[in-house]
Amino acid sequence: MSVLFALLERAIPNRTWRWMPQLVLVFAGLVALGNVTGRTAYEYVPFGTRQSAVAFAVALGWIVVARLSDGRGPAPAIAWIFGFLWINQELAFAVSPNVSTLLLVSWYAVTGVACVGYGRATAAPRLRHIGLGLGVIAALLALKAAWGLESTGARIGAYLVVAVFLLGIAWWYRQPGPAPAATEPGQ
Image 1: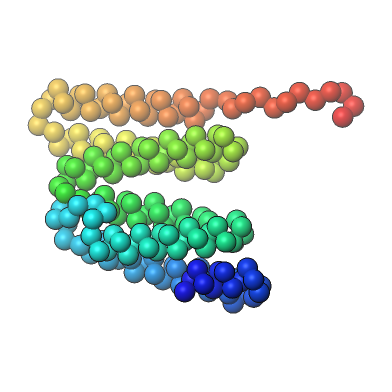
Image 2: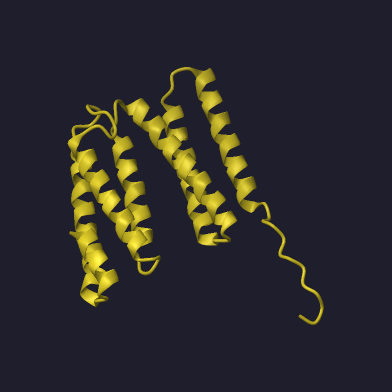
């Protein structure tokens, strides 16, 4: 229904049709995230349950509505936020505590690097800040997971990996972007 209303708004502009798909998708997204979170912890394969299929359908609805909005309004940002939260919840209690922690650390690290890279490419400092924050969260999760390791050598190795990751993303974050084009005097 949300996609239908978004299509109708494109054909016949109407304020109600512009906001109704987004409100319905926010509600559907909250319900889908609640259902994904409500599964029995560590007894499912990520993205392999009915709840995952429902969340995937909501994500597709967000993608279509965001594309139909032509970048206007909050739909594109909410689509990205829903996608991030959905994947986060899929991985948070998947398979076992160790596997889910590893998956979450990887998800935050990959998302953080992608945000910093895309933020640098598009000169969007807020996106770079989000990426740096996600990188720090990934590092903290990795430190928490490493703390529970029994082997001292494995714990030290995990701490070194986290340190190298943080140094790398911080260096990349702070590295100056491309220089602006030189302008001739009088322009």
